[in-house]
Amino acid sequence: MNNLRKIARQVLFYAAVLALWQGLALMKLWPPYVFPTPASVFEALRIGFSDHTFWIGIGVSLKRMLVGYALSVILGGALGLVLAQSDFLEETLGRLVVSVQSMPSICWLPLAILWFGLSEKAILFVVVMGSLLSISINVEAGLRNVPRIYAMAGRNLGASGARLFLYVLLPASLPHLVSGLKQGWAFAWRSLLAGEMIFVSLGLGQLLMMGRDLNDISQVVAVMVVIILIGFAVDGLVFRIVERNLRRKWGLSPAA
Amino acid sequence: MAALFEAQLTLHAVTNKIRMEGVSRHFPSGQSAQLAALENINLEVLPGEFLCIVGPSGCGKSTLLHLIAGLDRPSAGEIWLDGRKVDGPGPDRILLFQELGLFPWLTARENVEFGLRQKGIGRSERREQAGYYLDLVRLSQFEEHHPHQLSGGMKQRVALARALAMQPDVLLMDEPFAALDAQTRDLLHDELERVWHETGQTIIFVTHNVREAVRLGNRVLVLSYRPGRIKKEFSISLARPRHIEDSEVASMSKRVLGQLRVEIDKSVRAEFHHEQFA
Image (cartoon, rainbow over all chains, first blue to last red; front, side):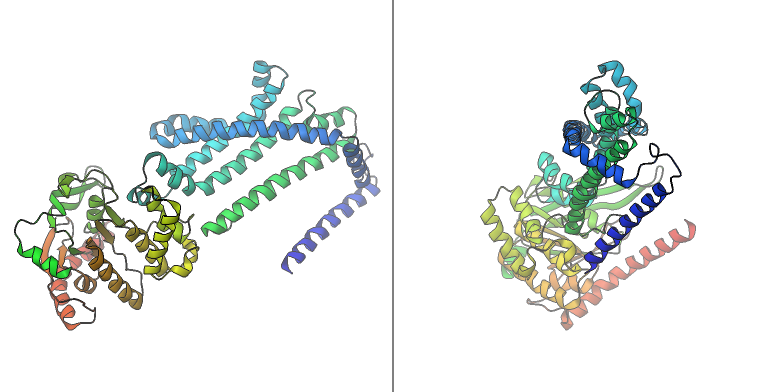
């Protein structure tokens, strides 16, 4: 019952947004190449998917995401682990990591192009640099914030070294790790689309730029819709469900 | 078991289970000041003894247990267990923490199984043993619950089962029943006494409840407030089974409390002073 009402509310909201959009388009305040109608965007979506360009774009982008994100998780996780081990590293390297992380990931692009040229590697580099540091910061915070009592209880019950890490410290920092992975994914996704705009890369970013080059506002908006939907699917569904289950199992209050 | 213990007391050349020699533990406090949590503790605990320790809060009771458990190191002095110097934690000594330290990501059963798994005990045997100890603390029906789904008293019983399942030679208990209602506490006193009889474990039991100490212990130590020293020692030779409402327990408690009250007053005054001038 409650769920039905929630869904109904959502449907109503988006119907209202579409109606407003359609209304503004009908008023012809701006020429159609500046402000598309909902119908023309749907048409662009239909064409994009039926001639496979969108499917290819999604495939290429997601494959890059997987490779780049996997690298980020491995490298960022390792870096976070190292930073959690020593206060000296935390105060030196750790602070540097935090400052570099404050830089928008698109700023890595010129460097990437100089190093790797207009290539796949350059895009991957931007994706990795965009998300690696946020993952490592969260991994470190997660490990450092494990309440002392858990480590003590683990040692008391005979766990030490790698076993203590694997069976106590790692699970104890899981809520932090998951939010780190989620944040890392979001950063990687943003970096990827920025990176894909630089050359003929076949990805979704490239499709956006192609729409601009062709002066096709409907395609631009259609690709934006696709990007939003993918972001929503991963962030809003995959990570939210994992996080919610984790919090329920642990008895933590729902994430803010 | 109790009879055996009395017999041991009469022997002179008894080997100690635990021996503490001149043990002190200081904590840094402020710029150069050192807080003496424990000062020159000399203590011998016999095998199979049920030793209770009472003292005002802040007297270093918990620190004493952490030292024996090997989770903390003394600033001075030495601790011996079965003639070997204590150097880190071991499965022969299990500490039941005041804050329990149950793992929230594991179910009650998995919590109990944790230590058994570290010992390398196989899955089915682990399960069986965990089931036995959860049954002992009357939690069989809550095996698959996570700690946050359990009441405070139930959590405390899970922690007790987890400690007992390790079958340690020495069981160190840090105010384990403080948060329980009176009935549950009575029940667990009986259970603990029974387990102690059956296993012959050495138990060191820290509490602020003098009656509880007298009800359970062979011996009750009163610790002084800052620095924590052994102020007075009472041998409790009342017949078992004892009950917390027994008049003998009450009159013995009165004697112990007489010693303790002075220390509690000191601690309260110190805290008041601290608040006034902080």
